[in-house]
Image (cartoon, rainbow, N blue to C red; front, side, top):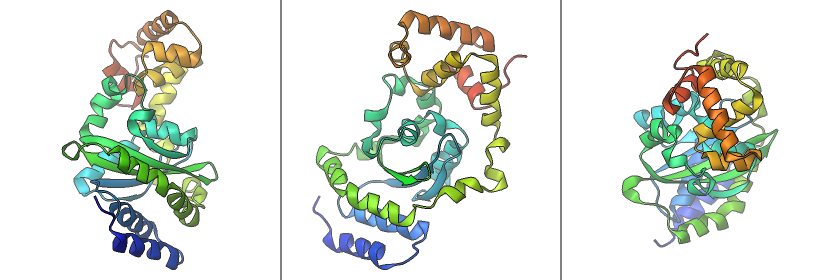
Length: 266
């Protein structure tokens, strides 16, 4: 694809020339800038801070797509998303989903029960630390029918990274107050998945609680052992103990417990 310089320069002028850009205006300019370089199907921009519910700054979804990509995501699955993990470490730069995903991600319960609903072939994100412990992630997505991003397109994203980072710092460098004063409907203590995770943690050791998060993220027992510095056999013993304590027998039940969709036995 040839670069659409007119679209690129127009988007850049909108970013440079307008004071106090809104989230929507910034997102629209970012989309036009990227689409002048290569095609993609969707864009969504989230702000992350710790385990708090991410803030959706911008998206190009219709109402049905928004329900899957944003509303459902914010209700708990974000905690198991490789992009969330990378944002909270943080790991600045441009990252492909498959470069961040654990070794068993595409066989994980998170992937089977949530991510498969997105119908994506690939997702690539710009990860920009924005101050106050916040990382802004600007995700570009292609549906299965569109195929993955070519290496040359990914290389263009990496070249564009300094401009994207400068845009984020100029527009979204003061996002802390949005996390500090969320609307009542978005406060974490009003979400069942937060209460469910607390209930599970009360029944498990700290090591066991860490293991279930890694399991649900898509890490194999071998990968978990390497991350925690224990033998693979020890991880498997922990997993059996976790299932026994929680009174479950499958990863699907573990996922439901984690997201607050079923009650742990008393």
